[in-house]
Length: 149
Image (cartoon, rainbow, N blue to C red; front, side, top):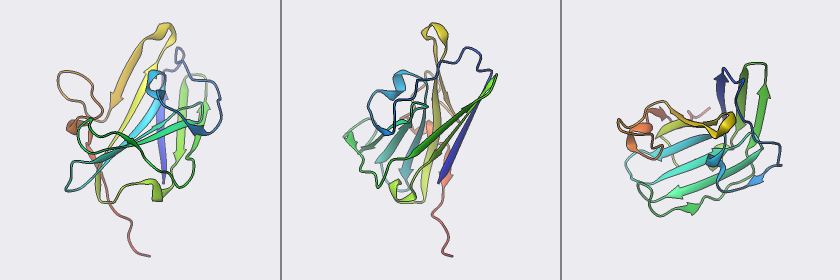
């Protein structure tokens, strides 16, 4: 599965330096891109974090911010940032076997850091009072199971 984020107006965007493909915690403290996947009919969900540094993380939660554990991955996702004068395109190739069961509600999010340490939090939808990517309101899209060939 390939995911793509496009960020425009990136003149002040801080992009983490290349650090090599491997699992790492705390990626959300800098510019990073995230996928949340909540299988239909339950409270559990998975969180995937992807950094332009090529570091990544994957977690399982048993409920809202509860029971966090590292999610096993069949292989490293491939993170590919491409930066222009005022745009960043960030692609992630995520092994389909890394996903929880489908169909599922999903949320695509981003933490954007600018020069001076200013951060903004982006999602397809947010709860009304403050950004919280784990909140049910952020699971604003659906992902169906692939059709049989």
